[in-house]
Length: 530
Image (cartoon, rainbow, N blue to C red):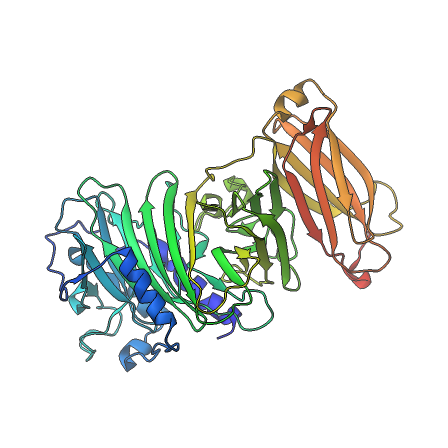
């Protein structure tokens, strides 16, 4: 399956994470059928992954029983998990686990285990776990060991809205206090944006550790497998205003991997205030996230607004021991989206924080053209400089934060808006084409400086042979910050990419994070100067 087709199916299915289960109270728990007990811990899982990597990759079956394979979207979405079968439903802990049925895009069963007191027992599929009355499966003969597609986690206080879900390949999602799913994460990205087929590793088994009655954290283990690599993962998931996933992984390559992506974030950007190429929808903006934020190992903060480019765009930002990066939804104003169905203003930011030095490498950003919001077309991840080799053990630890705000924010001012449009002087005939940029900064020391109309200067650079015109920087009291405006003039009829770099300073030094942008001038035939 090519990336476009895979992402379309994954995005559509993952969008269903937010669908509530029927509003039924928890009843008496039904007995969960468990297999024989076997000792289990993370060390044993790492050994299992290492052994798996030493064997040739064995593709999983994607053949579903005919009645399951025949379900359409509506039939599959009609299947609901019966809450009286929820894992840990009979205990006194704070959490429940519920399972996804196979079908539609999810054709390979994922093995599920419960871990309790260091012993793992496989969770058996039971048709009684699911309400399938509207799916067309009732009464159809199905294998007794059909299996599961994935799982979701709930609190006992709110069994209807899940706070995390793992479904499809190595994809998973989570939410902060807003309770609105948005972008997704993956266990691993392989060869994303290389120009040849991307590889999508699978979590082939999960181990769900029974939390103690007072625990605020759920621990999940995953075994990852793909043609290039096997891996063991441990997720310690703590819901809250900002949900935290503390992750450790051990990776065992089967072969040299051209581009390994750690902490991959996958999002969608169709149109926004800075890029209106696909703005035919009635809503002003449509995106899960509006920018890539980076906190470099040297301490520099960088903000790169996202775009929906005409052609695939790949960027790499070299660094040593990054402090963090993530795809953020900084604009949280409902009026800017006007979407009262999927609430883009409530979509969570996702921040990746290494727990120890990741060494030399780069944050990499892939932007893929998309026609509409059903495609996840944005990917960001960390790529180590040294390519993984067969036989290695690669150990990484990092934290993922899901919520309205990342845990780390610049002490300096940060970019709050990027707007673009036709350049030139209003009321005067335009003799040539230019493109106007209006970049707003707020926070840090800017509010105080704006009040006293201090001298704040933009440090602005342009590449690609472009030229800057009408540069201005002035207080914007409405946001307690400053607005920088300028026109970018492309060299002749060139459509080559032009790189822009901007930050604010005064006599004391830098006042803001660094704003980066990539602008591709339109073809001469499309340059309307009005």
